[in-house]
Length: 327
Image (cartoon, rainbow, N blue to C red; front, side, top):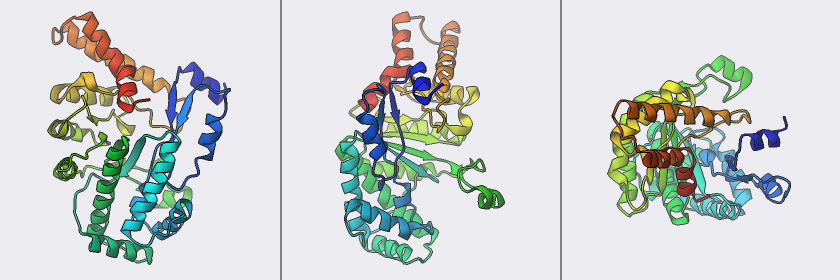
C-alpha cells in the first residue's frame, strides 16, 4: 500500500504536479534520477501568485520570484523577463503544461504605462481597484499565452470558483479547506475577446478550458469552434471538474461537447487531486464514457461501427491526451 505501488497498480504512466515559478524543482530532479521508479513525474507551471496583483502578499512574492530568477523585478517588463527565465528552467525539467486559476477569463486591455502603475501600486502595499486587477491580469494572460505558444506548451484555464466563502473557518483552517462554491459570473464575450486578441497574431497555444459551472458548457463549446486551427481539437473543453466530477457532470459535459463540437478529439479525464487514491476516477470516467456512447449506438444515434468506436473510446481514454500533450 505504498504510494509508489498504488501508482503502479493503477497503471499510471505519467504524473504532472503543479509548481510555482519560484520553485527549485529539486524533488523533480531527484525523482528523475531515481531508476527504481519507472513512472515519469513532470512539473506543470502554475503562476497564480505572479498574476494575483490584488493579493496583500503580492510584493513579498515578487521579491521571492526576483531571488529565484536572479533578476531585479521593478516593473511589468522585468516581471515578464523573470518569468521567461523561469519558464526556460521549467522546460529544462520537462515541463510543457501550464495551469491558471481564474475567477473568469477576462479581457480588459491596458497600455504599458497603466500596467507599470498598477504593478508599482501593488508592490508598494496599496490596494488596487477591480478594474486595475482585471487590466493587469489580462496583460499577464496575453503575455503568458504568447510564451506558451512560442515554447509549444499547453495552456489550461480553470475558472468559475468563488473561494474561501466562510471567513470564520478560513481564519481557523486557512485556504483550500472545503469552503468554496461555484461562481455563476463568467462573461463569455470576454473569453472570446481574449482568444481573439491572441488569434490576431496567430499566437493561441493549445488551450484547455474548464469551468466549474456546468451552465458554461454550451458557451465554451461554441467559443471553441471559433478558434480551432492547425491541429485537431487544438482548443479543448476540459473534463467535468471538481463539483462536476460525478456521473451527471461527466455525462452532461461530454454530451454538450458532442452536440456542439467533436467528441472524438476530446482528451478525456483530468484527475485534479492531491490524493493518490484518486486514480480510480479514470476508471469511473471510462465506464461512464462507454455507457454514454454505447447508449447512443443502441438508440441508433451513432453507427454500430466497431472499428470507429474502438478508435473513439481508446482515443478519449488515453491516446488523444498522449498525442495532444506530446508525452
